[in-house]
Length: 329
Image (tube, rainbow, N blue to C red; front, side, top):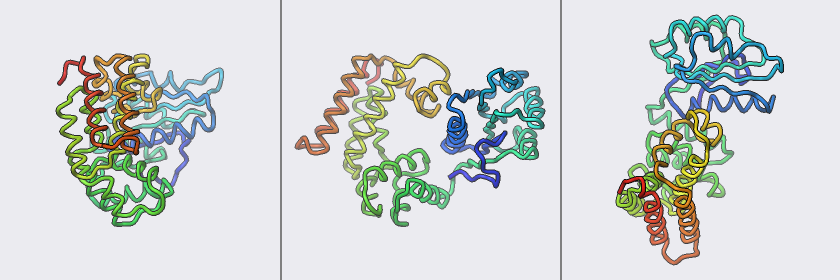
């Protein structure tokens, strides 16, 4: 989990999220936004990239409002801000506005260190979001995720999950969430083995990604490998459902920046970019066909059919064909 300093109020005037782990950075932002909306449901959230925060922009965003509305201003990649904009931010740190929470996402390191030091000197609440390169850190992360979910998992189960999934924190968090939802009682090594053996080599999300991209041969190859290495069929149908629904949501949404769409659709910005590429060429009819295929496969793997593997293959082929207008095979 992200580590925080002693000043742990999400509504502190300034929150500084430092590191390069996207999952933890996104969570740091979500925590502040959730706290602000709990205090005021009409909170205005502005999520900006470094190139969007030009000199004078921060002053405009933080100027007093006639309606005294609460506001959260998120600045991503703060280490890349221009020198003039950094001067604006430093000046603001000395006298932050009431009812406004500024969230600075900074990669850490030498670039932009002056801003980092200034925020710390001003007493900003700091959330550490480092890349977890050591297996021990990822193991601690998994244990923390189970605790947060209110579930008990044996040490062997946590280690097996890290061994199976690998280094992707989003995948680890998703796996913990899936186990917490599907499994009753203590989660042990046997359960993890049943769900995730071979997951690092061919995850259910890889199957889903190749299917919605229209790459039928690659999707079937990933599916067969996943099944042969013990990935639970229900995880594959879940991933297929997520992939197709994401296509449908993005297709129906109005255009905009990834950050705006992320808030509207409840997806992290990095996923918006990926789904946007996958969604090219999909039609509403194609999405409807794919969703029916997922529903049939889900029923098939849960007992309504005699052959779960066939149900999954049929769904993968149907989804990939629905995406074929993208021009990929």
